[in-house]
Length: 170
Length: 188
Image (cartoon, rainbow over all chains, first blue to last red; front, side, top):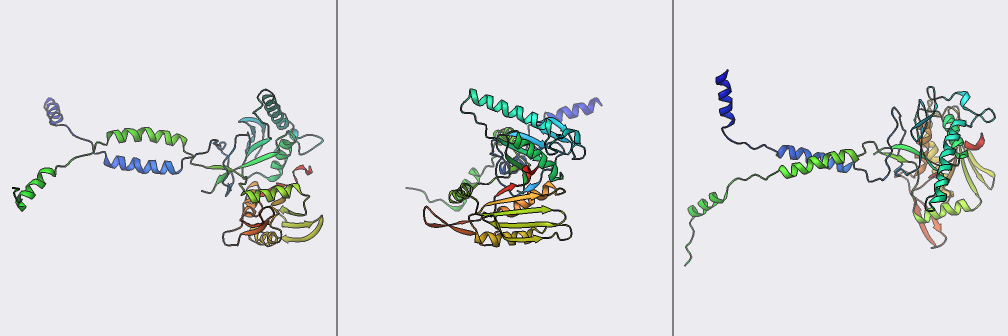
């Protein structure tokens, strides 16, 4: 055993060696080219909500900075805050207004609070604008009737300019 | 006087300079090791876009004119699982043309719809707005697909042309109906 250690030490001290980095540099070059190709220049990034299946579209417009409304299979979220739970993509009747079956009370309150906040900012900062823009991420499996309710409520809260988030074909 | 070099001299000289060398790749590797994590963090592997339209100025102006004026021609499409598409074209509030495009094997016939809308649009190239009324049971994915189908003229078809009233020049556009409005949202 002692002899083996001695032999190993001897071999290690035998001479210096250089790493062959060429193939590694080749690999990194390919990787960088690929990453540069998929590099995004857009200022706003939208990360799809967990478990959400966004619809595919040929639209090529970059997302904008606006209030984020998510209509997932498990609930409706405003700026990542769960507002209403959904059961398999369906809304419970209690969440709807008794007079207007398309009006979602809790969602309206939440969006209205955001709109009021934006208007308050506008009063202090004249450069800030409230243009009623909202980006909606909705699951492709959802029924239009639910989205109609969401769109109706958000337009009532002052968010009439809706942008639909989709996944690009590219 | 300069001595004439012999072949043997030349070959000796050649072997003297022909020493092998290796480029020091370590700094390049260090750079790449730094660059790759930065790019990995800022790269979007799933590109999320929004449905909106970027329009050429003349076309944009035509759309604005179209919005300002009272709508002379209006396109309305009703979309349902039961009957497919019901297209209604109105001129000054009177029905000018209408068509029903039924579903084929339970699927919406987008090809026929596009063909019909394209032919109608050639008659009214300055109209870019379309009212869509999807009914209960229509999945959101189909609504987005509809918007994709009617947004632009297909590459196999000729572009649409109209006269720009300011410059008196003919403007060509591949936009069909980029302005899709959910007409039934406020119906309640």
